[in-house]
Image (cartoon, rainbow, N blue to C red; front, top):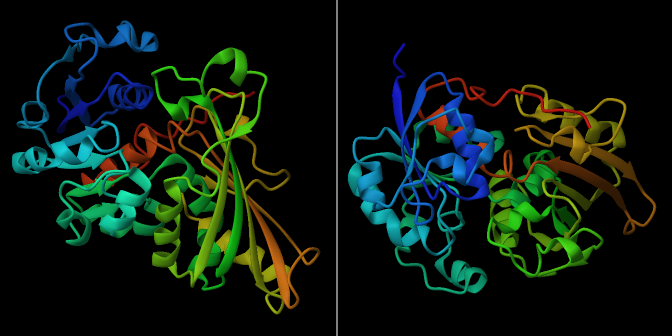
Length: 354
């Protein structure tokens, strides 16, 4: 049976591109027609993604974004930050729907973008005209369904936002929120660097960009959109000896008049119908339980020790696979919503254990 929708993947040779292709090759309604890349041009896609050998005859093409998007229903854009924005005008001109995995259209303030991405935005009007919807289904599902252009969230941002979203929606999140996020090396991309070099990464824990990570304004903006007040995200990322996975621990402070039972009920209500967020019943979230999947796990612990006077501490824990729910899988989840499909399509596999 012929598939209903045609898709192009631009920037398909990286880790995120490989996950997009893996999921789309299994998709019953979407056919991958073109894969564009500046690397491996003319080579089969399994040269970059060995796990896909024998599953497709697709090859990497050295074509422009406009050529890749011509005649497509949807484009999944996996270009780097600052590059994606320069290509967006020609993509928009093709009329195709676009899901952009870069950070170029997540923020609404061009000055904040320049501060954290160290470049002036080439089309700042697109940040404020409402054309891009932030692609977090747990917050913006209905808007994503109507969207033509989606800015898919960052991996740290997704994980931390899911940890804090129920508090934000209830209007309980305000003031300082301390966050430590531990991440695997694949989040740094396919090109080797000092931070991903195995001999030092495999035996090490170290921070980078403490209190200055580019996902901070994205998280702040999203939580305020959800109902948080004057929230101040104090985020310290940590690189870990993992290839995949993020573990975020967030410390929020709520009024002591809000009971632990009320807080737990908020979380259960927020996520009871979400297809890809689960709250483990007899354990806390752990990376191995979501590795290789589009699932996130969220857990909380509520107490008063260490809180400010009149406050209660909520320790929020969240885990994702940074390449799937933190990247390619969430992009496909948004794509499914945009195309009027069941958002779970090609994303429901539970992964392995351990």
